[in-house]
Length: 195
Image (cartoon, rainbow, N blue to C red):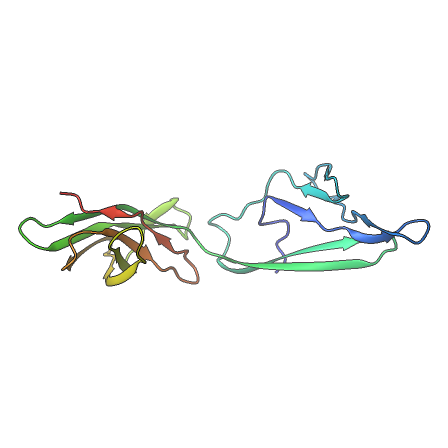
């Protein structure tokens, strides 16, 4: 699958080496676009050119997730062509929202709650509840220590979660969604206990 120019908004085109008079080899931009919406290239000091396609073609929630490959073909003055490929994993976005960490009064229990939302794969809404997903509960004593996974929780049918952890009333807390092949990972901001 070659969805070019889908992907990056701007792509640098690598020049072919072209033989000039006297046998020297000089960089020469060799890729030209004749498609609709192409614009004149921006010239750079080293002889390279950057081409933009207008309007920008960006991946959105209606494209299938998975591994995508972009191909670019450059052609030299003598007709020799070079094709390069780049692949990337396309995943739908997720967001952890309204994450809080509260100490339960009169105990050493900490309650974490919030919700996980995802880009709707059917296109009905931008972000909708992400049900039945496992989340990691992370903790660290202070900014100088590494994050440690101390528990897990699962979102309910409405994408919300609530978990209770014992024995660690101080420090910093965060919740992380590890992601899948179809959905990107996300981590909440660091939270301190609110009284």
